Amino acid sequence: MAETRSYPDLTTASFPNLDIQCEGRFKNYDFTNVTHVLVHLCDIIIKNINANADASDEYDNEDYLNIIAKMLSVKFFGNENQLEWLDTERVGRRTFVAFTNIEKKWERVQSQSTSDEKLEVVEVMFMRSNHRELQKAFWRPARAIISQKVLARVKKDLVEMVRLRVMWTRLNVSPRRLQRLSKGSVSA
Image 1 (cartoon, rainbow, N blue to C red):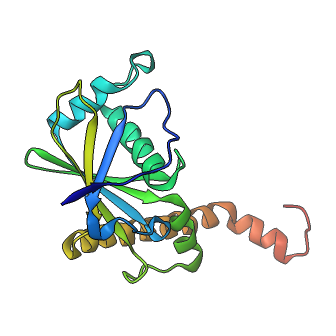
Image 2: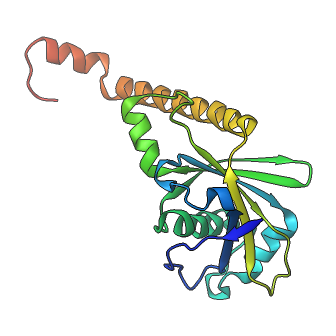
């Protein structure tokens, strides 16, 4: 039986209200260790989210990612800017959107660890509803296959980040600069 979970009421007026439910066995789930959130969406849900958003912000179809990230971030972590977009994949008529908990991302980057033991993923499924109704979602800890897919994407992201660091290091230290530094020149 699904149970409604109470979350901090810090929602911003420009975002649609969201009622998140879970199974009774997860009602005391600790969200402080969640590293990623994977959202299952269909086109109707995306249209409903955009329709319920504040019209003064003039959201277009791509802004649903920002809306969802902020809504879920407030509901799970009590902070509107806790989730960051990681990747989107479309399979048939469904869209899967992965978000990273930025607090945990920097902890992982500093330790340079990609072990799946530290990866904790939550799946969120938005339920179909009329665009005039309160938007409802159901969450659960991610299945093993979902965690593996997110881990593969995280490893790819980490490799890209290391590659960019190496590239910037090489750009900042040119051969001429190295010669000047080796000859005793203090100026950079």
